[in-house]
Length: 92
Image (tube, rainbow, N blue to C red; front, side, top):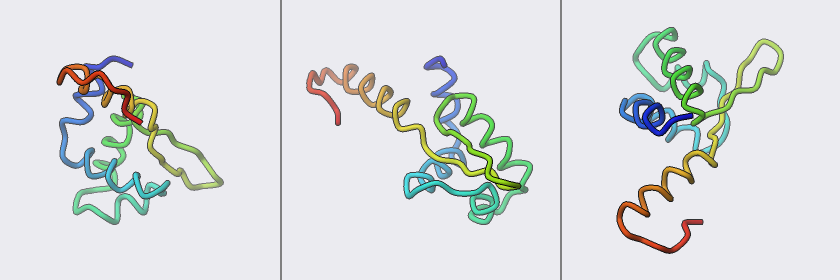
């Protein structure tokens, strides 16, 4: 995973909103699609970009795929931003 790939994934407002939805807990692809007025194929592409950036993980259960945040990558980004700001304390 590269920082450039992560920042590209975070640059899109729909992808940021997907992350906001997932901070409440894991969701199925269908539940995520229900929150947007775009096609399921579009949301699927956004989910793929987030997954490629390692910002989310997916788990297949039967015919459903559930998505959840990968908090470790988000923590790394927060630490990097804190370092840029000159903060030396650890983010928890």
